[in-house]
Length: 298
Image 1: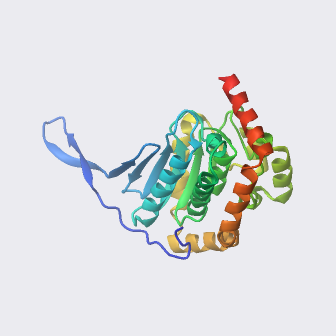
Image 2 (image 1 turned 120 degrees about the vertical axis):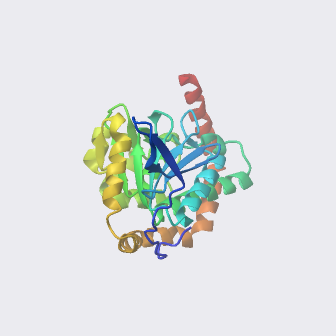
Image 3 (image 1 turned 60 degrees about the horizontal axis):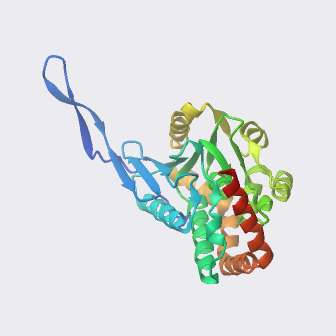
């Protein structure tokens, strides 16, 4: 995980390419420049605008952006590349699949596998959270669809959350509805966002909040029409980037360090607890039942 104490400078943008414009009179001139760098792998698309220092990170693991082991690995690699890139100062996280931000952890990674697989999978989940929650960059979630469980965690890790103003879209940590339990660091992240009482009720009931209700409890910061999400995220990012990086980063570190250190110190124990829990016969049967329900809905 990138250390939050490391200060990143506001490096000047480097222009990599230009757009050539021709005037009506036939004389050509360089009138406008664009400086985009694109990183793409199987499940993540990153577009970095070097003129603004802002990257758009699109999840593209159709149909519902489940957080599989492969996805989590690519996600963390992409984040690390941006973290060490001195040009990049902010990330807008969104989905390439309309109507769904992320459906959360891939259940198939947690059923019928070996203890070694569960260990690798959970370590990847931890790594994703540590890198995103502890990022030095400004992180804005542009939530353009429903976001249950691990998808909600992705949004909670961000500095600011913008969600589509559509009551059909819902967000929440609904693990208990699947017969599993959200780990302490999921819980701590939500407490840091909406407070203890709302978190306790939400986690016990596995509540999913339609976007208007998510705004009321502070789970998201702003609702906008779906076609305005990206432009709004860009405008909010511009506002956040007016603050000197070093001051904002140190403040973020102060606010999040205790929560991050708690998992770092208990990381191996947390993995062992997950493996012990997920390998129980009762839990495996519960997840299998849930998977059958999903198949019936298709």
